[in-house]
Length: 220
Image 1: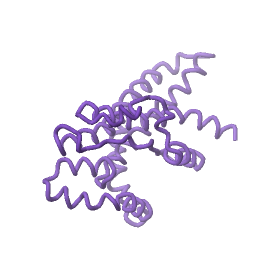
Image 2: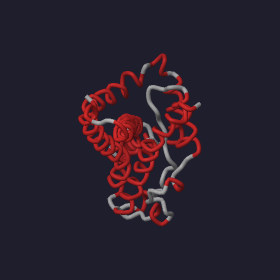
Image 3: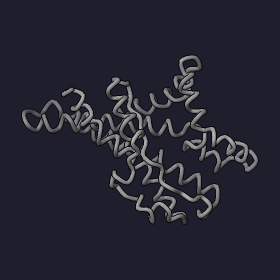
Image 4: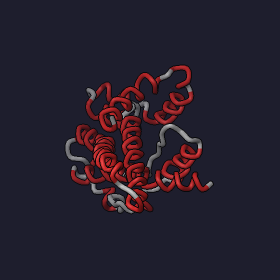
């Protein structure tokens, strides 16, 4: 139990920052493009209490940590965006949606820089300083992996995931209209994809290669 608590404490900050910044980015860009809904509801905030989703932010990550999953995944409560208020129509919707994954990639890059910096000093640190730096280094590495996983997963091209909404904003109107019909079934489709991955290996063929390339670039 002590090891589990220690592990959770190390994962908590990277996971919270990743999911919170993802949603704040959506709300901030939406506000800049004409929809103040998220700002008026107090959702453009780094206060975790306004973003925490019981299952996505707490229960799922804890379960994955407890199961010693090779990666941890999660999400925060989606920020409300009224796309009809945006200046720029469907293109603006694509920009608002893209802001989330891009923010996670930026966090991954920043975390990788911190990790590499601390890794370079690791051999020269001793005593109390080493005990302080080591958890930070581990958290930085976890942040890289988590944010890469979050960005790539969200770019899966099925609405309401970010990748699907981006397609809705850039596809020709007729194709976008057809794709939009899938949104009500989007999460069901993702559950089927996850449940059948053992047979279809979609993650291995589509998501894992993208994650592997990014992690290799960032962590070496």
